[in-house]
Length: 403
Image (cartoon, rainbow, N blue to C red; front, side):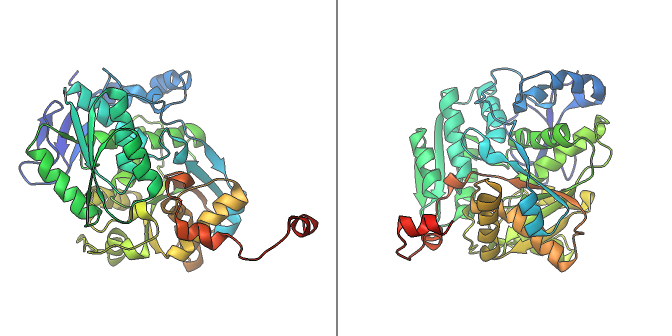
């Protein structure tokens, strides 16, 4: 059986899985991992194996492209909550929240890092590098520590959540801060990695996408082949394209007949992908100075937009951008009415559903799954905290009597 290999999503060029390459050397397009073993798998047979295994993402190891020296912190297997209060707020019949904040470092990035760092070990790399708005760096730092690798990260000097930069430093990563934003940080590390022995672990690395696709397998495990819409916060466009890749594989295994219709949600101040989808063209117009309280999706030049656009077209997806005010309202609903604490970027998925229902683009009778990408403690914004605290001097006695 041919081992996993890399293929250009544009010209179809192919490379060995052992070749260190991030984009196509022929046309410059993105690469994807191809698993020849999928063609010979019996879906029902392999699904029976999965059902008896521990609930981490590695229960699906047959569809993951590394099988030696696996670096895992027991990521995946995150809970799926039915959120009736959030459904009523958004105006839909049924709504679930897939809470990725329950991963080891508190975000969905752990899925991708488990595979990507495992690949780094397989390739005998000693140094891994990434640019980040916070979640990627904290995750890479933790998995590098677990693997005994040196981690180097580049982050913006301002606008990165304190919780995330603390995690990054705590796990031992060498941290470089630059005055510009994430987009400049990413271009910096891509250039640096190409001329060094360091292994780049941003989502332009196709091996990372392989870990993140396991969210699709878990939703299939929990919901079966039930039709639903899947709302995903979008920053660098890697996660939404990864999840779609997972559902396409489930179709190939004949375990899913109808994959979900995707909903891509961005913040109004950082919405180049949503704007492109709404225009109906294939030309991304970068946002030079992205601005939003949702720091995890404050990205103006999403590197994976071509993969995400293909996913949106294939799923006949919807796209929406939402205000910071609506994001914070959705965050508060999830926390105070459902009991799930998410960072602002995560709440964008729910905010987008509400706005689409109100505009009539999404039918209120639909079932929706919102991906909550990170834990609330990842981004404890001081301004948000201050706005939630009451300025009134209320006594404990009066407060208890009012209940």
